[in-house]
Length: 441
Image 1 (cartoon, one colour):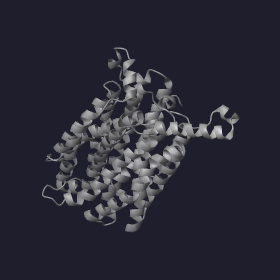
Image 2: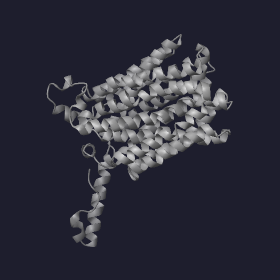
Image 3: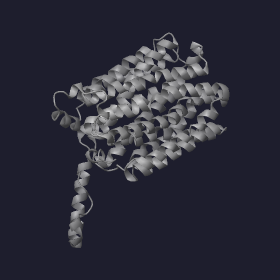
Image 4: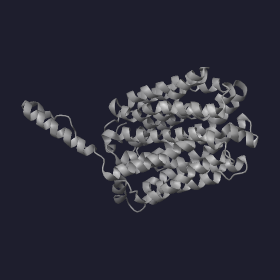
């Protein structure tokens, strides 16, 4: 990418010459940042696909009280069910790392088709075991789709706008959550009840399964593929740990960042309806309205979060976002008025969404192209998401004794711990090409 800063020799130029040079450099930078027609189509495709990640993410939390009643589950068993389905997110490790071998395109295609079928199958399940297995499979494909979408965004868009693009695509997930919050109260009133939620979520993806044919492989992966030897396809499962020791440390730091973050952000979102119904006396409709209003109010902030990371940098952006997330978690689960809860939830939804572009950016930027999917899979799926399996069960058990507000508000400490890790160990990567950021450690 062209550099718009004056060169070292620029100081010797006269004022008109300097102005002309600066203008030419700025125009070159603008041209290099302009999106091609394919990038525009790719952005739309990735945004729509990620929209359904947000829809499904909220769907289970919105139907959980109804599902528990239908299937006779206690709060602890409901938490265990959520944790069980999240095993699919950990298993997504197996599929995501294949994007470094098969390519980004075939893996993304497979995830879209697989999630569509798993979501439809969920609507047919007669018991908690069948439901859990289908949702485990759905999340296996869904999280793999999300990870590969972020890798596409990092590899195919200009460096100066990488945070912005990753943020916008992640914001599409929030739009999916808003849609889910708005329609679930209506869908629960249909004759099929909670089953309708998964039917509605899967049908539009059938169209996406057809639209995927126009997708290209990323240019960076094609370049790496052309330089490989014939044995790369049989690369060891542990290959990322047998190369440069820097990659081991990077996986470890990112895994801690992801896992500790999820203890707060996943559960603050996942159990809000349980808390609102049990401790604030809200109905399904009131919860849906509260979540919808909070999500809509949070959208301008969410859409700006990616641009924030490009303008003030990853580290300072993380300070704003992770600090806000911690405060919002306490507000949401400690304030008693519906207005206070709504305000807290607004910033909590912002935080839950905005921490992801921060960590997505670092996870895609700190590994070389041939290890990018492998590094993402190890740090996010296999290690980082283990807290999404364990923590819902722990919090469900604690809620049975203490109620929901105390243990959930206590999770606010975890975003602050992650912020400390970022400021201590993570470099500034904003505006740099991936080939440069992979060497910043």
